[in-house]
Amino acid sequence: MGGEFLDFLHLHLDQVRLGQDAGDRLAGNIESQKDGNGFPSRDFVKHLKPHVVNYLKGNYEREIATDRNLKNGKHGEMFLDPDNHKIRFNLGKGPWVNFSQKYEFNPIHSHSGIISAVAMIDIPEEIEEERETNGFHSKAAGCLDFIHANQHATVNSKTGDLFLFPAYLWHLVYPYHSDVERITMSFNITEVRFDNMYLEGGQVNYH
Image: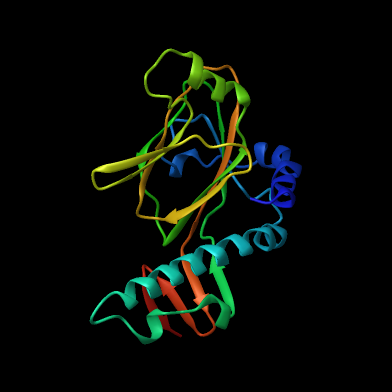
């Protein structure tokens, strides 16, 4: 996540903190979960769009590579090259911001939509230090963990990191014991439009 995007998020955090509570529709065991209405929507999308496009390009390139290695590859409309389309997307009810305190956590869950994201707005150094000094074998305090089938990946995230991933992917955030605030933002992309087509639930549809 670029410095300008991170600066933009920090600039509006105080307004978001005073905003509407979002905890009644979120999975987190976190007392302060707020709607992201305090972020000016037009500027938010302007900062976010390059990251969404890069994610779509990565998916497109992986599908092309897979197709080349299959005898009966897929063809046609499913290959929507982001460079050849005007792209728009729908954020649904997002974004929202988690102002996490010690002992709070996000249990294992997945999201709605087709793409989900977690942005690390402020991950204090104390949490990283805790991972190395708490004496536990698993260095997971405050970490984000992705789970797929019988595998998982624990991510020691840092301020400024932005993770985009399929909405169906199970994930969680471990608690920590340091007396600091961990600030993250999440959102779901419920629909991606390519010109007169839209991608919803992994399928291409037409208006």
